[in-house]
Length: 195
Image (cartoon, rainbow, N blue to C red; front, side, top):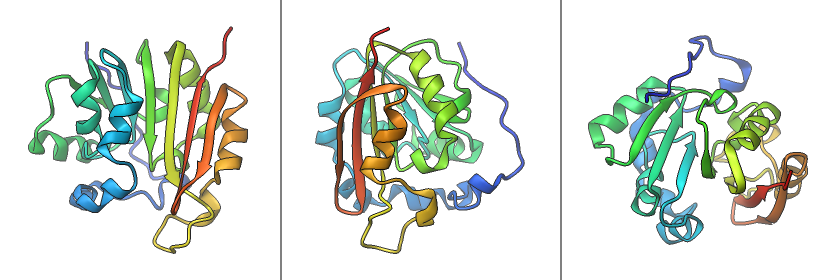
């Protein structure tokens, strides 16, 4: 089954700061492991999990998730990112999905991971979609640039969240288990609310 949702070619105000796929190679910088290590990602994913990687880009973090997960859906709305990933080599248990976060049409996942992409999505619509996709024990894991970052080498601050503001937004749809500020980023872990 191939998951592909039509993606508009127009650039929205939300997209203005998004890294263009022509610069995709920048996403392969090994220093990005400082944002979240392979060990931390593997610790968040169980053997046999189905994972959705929101804003997967070139698959830099997706490759780590694929080590443990049974299936990973690498979701990005830029076909150029998927083209880069194909050239690099996509693991057999990874399926590329051309879609915006709020429009994914994947039926079920155990874990949804968003690394450095929460500020790029239509959050309320995406969270409603994530809620439908995650099973009763499903987990949402977010690591994103913090509005409190000490560096200025980040997306525009007005588009960013803090751990507290992200937790507040997410809590309308999920039970927040963890929300902490880190060095220039924040981490949030939430689970599906019991219906």
